[in-house]
Length: 223
Ligand code: GRF
Image (cartoon, rainbow, N blue to C red):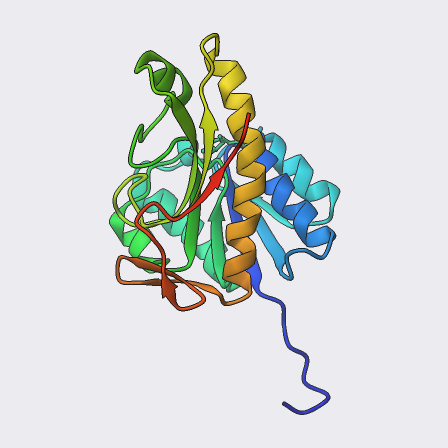
């Protein structure tokens, strides 16, 4: 590389719908120099998402693509895609993005889109995971980072945080403890990806070229 050539940092586009605390965790890891990347755009489908303020507060460009203004999932996604692709990101991060995506959309970002889900996938896909885990008398719960595929909450796993469920746990209390762990494992996965260490090879996740176990890396929380 010639001395004058500047190597660009990996660019990230984040999609959010709400609080944006996972986005905040990634922003802070970048600010602290732990992740060497740049968030070039944050997009929300919800104009009132608090995460938009978090991004704006640190000068990250934001966009709103409000799904209620589109008459089909396809037209909504077309607009979303237009915004994302204009930013030419290496990685798309779903951080509490609460829209179901079509296979056309997920295939377009195959191997370069990550999601975090608040359960130990494949258990408890979908919503209300904390209450469902308690109702099922599960002894453990947690969160999973996975590559996004056309199967809802079903893509290959990268890393899971495993949290014990206590006898007297409420859904809200458990959700809070899981969220704390989300803020640890999501930045780890993003860092690995941005360093070129993490990749998707068919249905196999590779870290430093080695295939990961089917559950991904386990991050066990001692209580
Ligand atoms: C997190 O629990 C995430 O796993 C789920 O929605 C919640 C979003 O939290 N998909 P935040 O918007 O990152 O604060």
